[in-house]
Image (spheres, rainbow, N blue to C red):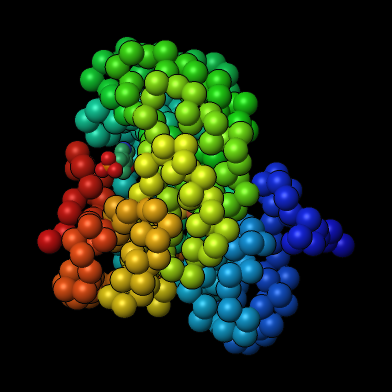
Length: 334
Ligand SMILES: *Cc1c(COP(=O)(O)O)cnc(C)c1O
Ligand code: SF4
């Protein structure tokens, strides 16, 4: 029997994480959908399980098999189709892995992976084949990572990514921030996270207090693909972060049948802005095996951007980028 906690009792983020939806059949039941209406696959779960917070599922539309939030998390048979050019490690990241838990690829910024776990599993994720077990740092690896950062004075920004860095406890985060604040050349800590969107309860006052405690400047880059993800609870979480002086940006992935038109992306930008979040990047899909059905062609992407620019103020237009294995930055597509 699956034990479920009624929504009104989900008052802590730990409770939410302990009660994720992991069975697609349960999800379909909640959404009033029949398996025949979908391209559901149970086989793909072995490689990349379903992980879905209830609050995110609540924002999906009942009875809609094409719901843009559902399609981001639904395990589908299409994932088994081989698309040419879609590989396990599209960014050849492993060669920029100077030690476990660290990616140092771009000047001035280093990416730390404090955890391999996420609050939600997004089916298009390029990390779905990442050798996570080799990147689960223990205390010694933490100290080694900090030593690496301390030894390179060209670094000014530490990016916490993952996995989802807010999956670690406040206590663990505090330990890390304290050590980072003690490294004189580090000015900013940036957190790449989906938590404020998928489990807004994670943004507690206690967490926000952490962000005001150090000399460091905090930047948070959320990950939202559709305006429907941003309900009032998310908006309130963003407000708490703004009050703690955290600068908020958003990155999205351009995804077929989810947000691949100018109108949807314009709505997303407008909604982000009402939450105090500035659109930052719109990523072309990384060509990871199992995600070919999400791909939007370069030509279509360009035409969407042209329409978007004609519709929105410049500061609400994200930069369309592509990540290339050998490049020293994300490549803008003009
Ligand atoms: C995306 C990314 C960054 C951050 O790039 P910005 O352009 O500063 O947002 C840093 N390091 C790695 C390895 C990245 O993939
Ligand atoms: S939250 Fe981010 S890292 Fe985790 S599965 Fe989704 S896209 Fe990937």
